[in-house]
Structure formats: structure tokens, C-alpha cells
Length: 401
Image: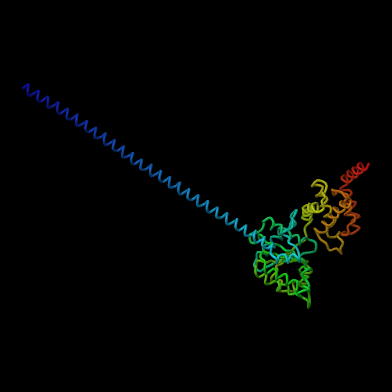
């Protein structure tokens, strides 16, 4: 019995040991599976990381490639722009070196080659824009129509000023404006018996990107039996589109001569130029006096406030009903003439500065306004500028003593 009990106990022990062994094996297997799972997860993570790295690398490469392509594109665009500018510049230089261009200079001047100290067309933005639109229209040229002395030529110079500064549509950039004298275009060339105007047109045919400005253009048309077929003479160069004609004439001459020529009216679009207002005229004078200073080597004395008062006074004494009727001169020409005379008086006295005495002398001696107006306006002048005049007179006496 005891032996049997021992055997049973041994079996129980063996069973317990087996169970422990099985449990340990199960744990080991579970631990192994866990480790395998972790390893697999790590492998998957590594794959994801590698994939992410590859994606980032690809993105960087794509970005870098895109940047390089953009850089190349920008460089190409810049080279194209530079090439266009160089071509335009070369075109301009070619025109200047052309023998045909040099022939045309015998009949006038290149106003795009002038030095402009200030904008010559102050307050004329509307008219310049209207003229530019006409010049951009194929087979159309412009004609400026207005009273004498209101600045029709200044508008064309303002266009030239814009071309110099590049402040103009691309289609008109690097154009050359030739101002031709209408007097020099009339008549024939003695040696060849060819019409001078036809000779000019023949030379224009060999040039590109040129505008021709002809003041007093009505004199080339004439009247009656001697009428010149101006429009048809210029038709070959106008129709090409690269040559533009700008004319200028007064309102009376336009009605009298231009309207009779139907071919001219078809090809030349009218730009109405009105007389400047009082405020605009003062602005024009303030913008123009630096040109007088530069040309004559003199300086207009005083602060901008006093200068503004001087310009306003000259503008007021040259208003419409105070002008001498026979002169037929308008703003701004009439007031600028008096201002220029003040500069001339300073130069006559060998002084470097234009002062209030010179302005008074210019008003006193002008032929552009009525004598009774001068007498009345000088009284007002003495009142307005009394303090300045007395101060300068005292300074002159002091300097003399």
C-alpha cells in the first residue's frame, strides 16, 4: 500500500512538473511570438521610414528639379527680354546711322534726341493719351488742332519726353520723332527737279519706327488749283504702319484747308487742344521756368510761395480780355513770353538772379497787353509785392553806399 501511495505521489509530482514545463514552454512560445511580432513591426516601421525617406527624397528631387527648371525658364525669359531691349536699342542705333535718317535731318530735327529739363507738356495728359491711342491704330495718324500759342508743339515734345523715359506702350517704344519744317518741304530740289516732300517720303520708305511731326501742316495742302495731294503722297509710308505722321494747325486753318481734303481727313484723326485754364497755366509756368534758368544760366529768386504769386499775377494780367487783339496769342505762350522777358532784363544788367524788378520791367514794357491794362495792373503789382520791392530797394541802396 505504501508503495502504491508513493507511486501515486510520484505520478502527481510528474504531472505537476509536466504542467509547469508546459506552462513554461507556452510562456516561452508566447514571448517568442511577441518578439517576432515586435521584430515584424520594427521591420514594417523600417519599411515605412524608408518609404517616407524615399518619398521625401523624391519630393526634394522634384522640388529641386522644378526650381532648376524655373531658374532656367527665368533666365531664358530674362535673356529674351534683354535680347528684345538690345534689338530695340540696335534698331534705334541703326536708324541714327542710316543715311536716309541723315538726309531727313536736313529738313528738321530729331526731338527724341533733345535734352528735356522738365516735362514740356505739363497738364496735357489727356491730349497725349488721345494722340497715343490714334498712333496705335493701324493706318491712322494724328493732327493737333487748336488756337495759336496753346502748346500744340509742346504736346508732341511731351510724347517725345515719354518715349525717352519709356513711359509709353511697348508698340511705340524706341520710336524716333522727326520735327520737319513745313517751309523746308515746299518747293522743288533745284538739281533733280523733284518735289522736296516726295524726296522726304522716299527716304522715309527706307526707315522703320519713325514719327514725323509737321507744324502748320495746312501750308503743305494749299488751296485751289495748287492744292498738294498731301495724303496720297504720304499714303505709302502711312499704310506700312511703322511710320506715323503728326500734324498741327490752328482751328481756322483746319476748317479752311484740311476739311476740303477728304483723303486727308480719312487718314488723320483730329485731337482738339483747348486753351489751358488759369490754374493749369500757373502750373505750366511753374514747371517751365527751370528751363529758362538752364538755358540762360540765371536763377529766379525767392521761395516757391513767392514764385507761385508771381506766376499767378502774370497769368491774371494776360487773361483773355486784357490781351492785345492783334497778337492772337493765348495761354500759356503769352504769359511765358513776359516771364522770359524778365529773365532777359536780368541778363541785360549782368545779374545772376531774376528779381521782382525784372518782372515789373517785363510787365511795363510788354506789347502783348493793352497799355491801360498795364497802367492799372502796375498799381496792383506795387501793392501785392510792396514788401519784397521795398526790402530789395533798401538792400540795393545799402550795397551801393
